[in-house]
Structure formats: structure tokens, C-alpha cells
Figure (cartoon, rainbow, N blue to C red):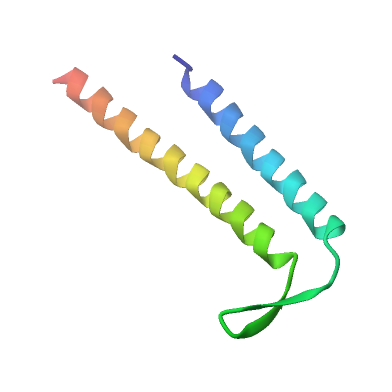
Length: 78
């Protein structure tokens, strides 16, 4: 198992890689427009939304893990 520093390091690396991927998408996709739900948006926003969703999920998973571990620590003290 990873200690808390190892998990924090993995989290930071994951967010850094999401950021690098987002920058690559931003500069790789052109400014072409597509219709989404009746609105015209730039094509590059679609993969950025997906990447942002994964980053948000990673953050939520980290917070859930922190809560779970603090509950385990309190239970072991009893």
C-alpha cells in the first residue's frame, strides 16, 4: 500500500498529466465549429470537457479515500 505522501504524489502527477493533455488538445484541435444540443461550439471544447471530467473524478476519488482512511484511523483508536 502507498503511504499518504505516495498517494498525494500520484494525485499531483495525474493532475499534471491531465493539464499537459489539455494543453495538447487546445493547440492540436482547430477552431472548427460543431452543433451540440442545438448550440454551435468549438470542437476543442468537447475533449477538454472529457479531460476535465476525468480530472474532477480523480479529485473526488482522492477526497473519498482521505475520508475513508480517516474513518479507519478513528475506528482503530477505539
